[in-house]
Length: 295
Image: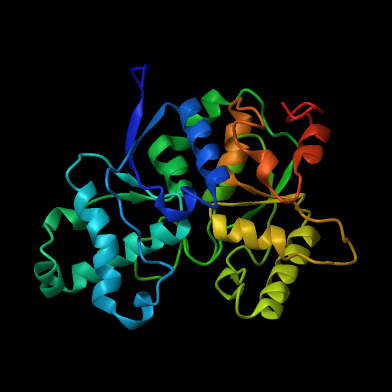
């Protein structure tokens, strides 16, 4: 980067940010440019294995896949940034398991430094690596008056025995970030509940029930939109709301990076807001966070 205060991370996009969740990758890239965070993509990265049956059926294979990424990233003196919540979870769980199983470390030919590698999700990257002060200093379009339901989902702070960046029952990291950009985070009861994304193809009724419950709870708490750091949660919450009466109007769902990027001066097109299924632009325009034209 051109500036002297640039930060650098090893960027692990994972499979979906290269395909079905490209809008998330665009949002992250735009936001990081405003924060002078250099994303150095890990050359030759491989799938983390989150969606393969091996996670359940073959512990060694399920650990080896994220371990390949950790081993490759350990060559550099930089933390790893995994914005996909599933990738982040697999990397963190692999580190946990490898610490407990030195024989597996040896069998896979891994170096000890893979255990010391810092792995960040989007949330703790912003709060702990970038820092709230840096974010506040760069806000040019605060999201004043926008009530945001921060949604953590299942993967960022579970299981409990991996290294957690926040309280697994009552986290506050996302809320602190929203406050730093001028937004108004609401308190709601279901911010750690599952959206059922893993059931979307096989148990659609159950999935829609979970999403409807989340949306009703977020609205009842005053949320005008929901913010997430997981592309699976984003897709599921947007596409499976159905009629959540008494307020049948869809609840906009955005990435945390969308809101941070907008507050830092990114345009709607730069963060990919036009790619979302539920249009959040009318809400932002009403609060003067963007112009009526969405720029």
